[in-house]
Amino acid sequence: MVAIESIEILSEAGWRARQREHETRVGVWTDPHQARAGRGEKHPVHDFLFDYYAFRPARLRRWHPGPDVVLAGGSAREFLRWPEYREISGGVMLDLGTLPPKRRAFVAWLRDLLVAVRDRPAFFGCHGLHEWAMVYRLPPEKIRHGAWPLRFSTDELACIVENLPVRCTHFDAFRFFTPAARPLNRAQPSRATAPEHEQRGCLHANMDLYKWAFKLAPFAPSKLIADCFALARDIREVDMRASPYDFSALGFAPIQIETPGGRDEYEHHQREFATRAGPLRTRLIALCTRLLAGSAT
Image (cartoon, rainbow, N blue to C red; front, side):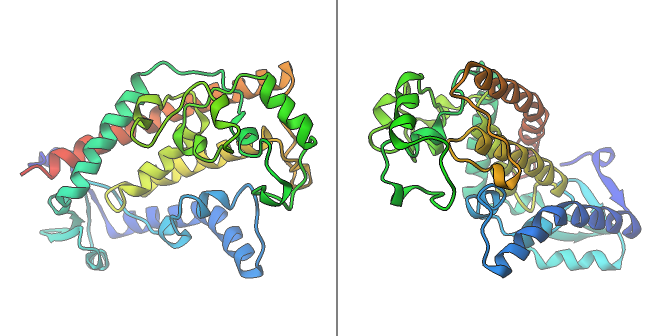
């Protein structure tokens, strides 16, 4: 049972204002993506968050208040279109008791993962070589972003990968390594062992906070989802700037991780992102804890 003092009651004017604010904020990201899609264009940097994570722009724009918020006013009944909401005296709110057992098990797993990543020492020595390992010894016709030039020839790129330690800890990056690159990686994460390798210095682990947030929708506050998206978008830009591709025509100056100065620059970004991700991870852990408590039978 939730204590009454922990519940926030929003007037219709109040929650409508938050809804509009959210829609305006995310529209800066979703509108250009949808305009490009309408023209049949692809952006190799910014479209990734929509294509890879598969959370549709319409769902990102959709506002949900999160747990323990009562939406007052007659219009709040529109939220009853989602089965996770219920009508109470004074308005409409999320019903945490509707969290089914399968999703509850996922929330428990996710909380354990987030806590483990939070408590595990951060590692800042990978230098972004994962994108290089994804094209290592690969024929040109099989390169993912083949429409964009590489900064090095195939042999030069291979030499860089072979002479720098490959130390990727993130399975969802490692699984895209070329077969020739996989043995070069210090760790050999699998889907089953991924939680044992995840660590908060990894750009992709911090980018994935967006994935974990939207997987909790509609129970996740939309502000948290948008905050995680904003971080993921910044990480994606750095990720691609440190890649072997040349995206300077799009305004992304390369981070030359093949040089000591470039590796220092990359690590600076890693540390900055790890700092920014910390409070978001804490909010996600708190949300998981609340969902588990509210759905307990």
